[in-house]
Image (cartoon, rainbow, N blue to C red; front, side):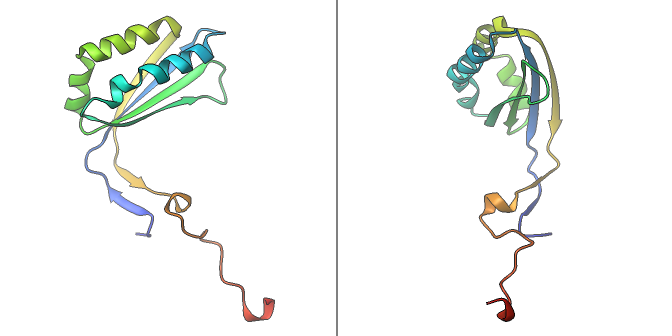
Length: 128
């Protein structure tokens, strides 16, 4: 394995939510998502989350969240914090779907690790 390979993960459970937002409500949705996001990140089972806007489909967003385990996520789903979070975001959603998965491998890219690109090499003596 290369220096950027971290190998098998320790059982991270990932949730990906795809949401289509009502036209004209996108900016308000983004702001509201950011304001209520602490309901997820403050849960002890949550590792991190992201909100991403599709470049290919107008009004489509993806929320990806990582959890220490599936049971930890499922417990959060039943919590009052999750109900409040969903209640605040629901008016913006035209439709939504969710998929869940277990992360098998994680590989960190060279740019994040701060190393030189793999294709770079030291200049040769003749090029100086």
